[in-house]
Image (tube, rainbow, N blue to C red; front, side, top):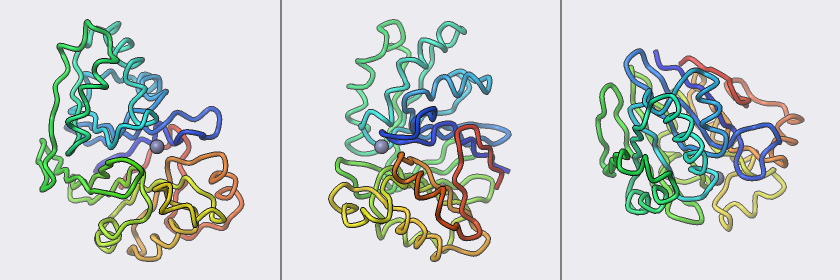
Length: 245
Ligand SMILES: [Zn+2]
């Protein structure tokens, strides 16, 4: 059964002490990492991993809170004898990955492997990965994941979109961003982010036994999430939360 490690649960402007976007999905055979924000390398090392332990690192888009942990991680990993980095992305994000690699130490740049995930999906080991175009302020792809008979959707940064809603009645776990408090829902289409009330509406469209895990929180959305009553099946993970599905 897949296990999900919520290692970085904050977006930019998150609660102090939280690392930024960093989610590890692990089976008995493979591990992938979804986004790699600031503090992700430290979190992975706290759990005993280096970059050599992952099949790939998926970058959803090129905002810094989704990749700027890479510099720290490659230095940490190379100290531990690992100089490998497999970066995966879709569409224009894939084509822009070279700019990220320019930020990395020269000694590891030549050891970076790039994988483009086509929009009709790619099977990698026991994982099937299919990018989901979403609606953010820059080109962004969430990710549909099938592994060990389970279906997982990762929204990345987005307002609620038809592409994600269409998947909801058939998903075991939705990992969705909640950047905005409910009283700023009108900013959702302008900023390309989701509010607390919008995310809880998504849960209403999901099966009773499925789970909505709320990530990419900010000080504003967390303040509301601490106070609001949450329906059954809604998880607000802190960094280091481990979930089996
Ligand atoms: Zn973000």
